[in-house]
Amino acid sequence: MNLNNISLIGRLTKDVELAYTPAGVAVGKFTLAVNRAFKKEGEQDADFVRIVTFRKTAENTANFCKKGSMVGIVGRIQTGSYEKDNVRVYTTDVIAENVQFLEPKSTQSAPNGNGNTNGYQQQQNATQSNYNNQEPFNPSVEIDDSDLPF
Image (cartoon, rainbow, N blue to C red; front, side, top):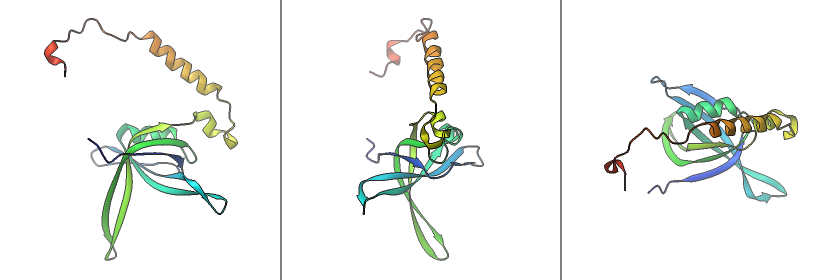
């Protein structure tokens, strides 16, 4: 049972910083601006949350999202610390297990977010067509009852 679970929706404050570990694992880091539910002196206030992604999630986020993109994050909170100039610095990050892109790419690149979404719709239609043309089950695979988890 995972009790350390967080869901956030917000906008990237800058492009994703993508790097690779010596073992070749992709690591993406970015900050997410998440609006608060209340306003301070008539203005919307926001929290700026550090997000870390790994592997394909990191690569996809870096390739398809940029500053200002709206995304949904599901992940967990991870705390840590390090020492800098003899001072202990504490960190809190969200390790994103799932990043959902909440805007069509054409809307993200258009000024003021009023872009033409026809390209996005065509991409969605092509994806749906690919799913419809694929056989969902492979009847040649035999499964023994002992392989079932229940």
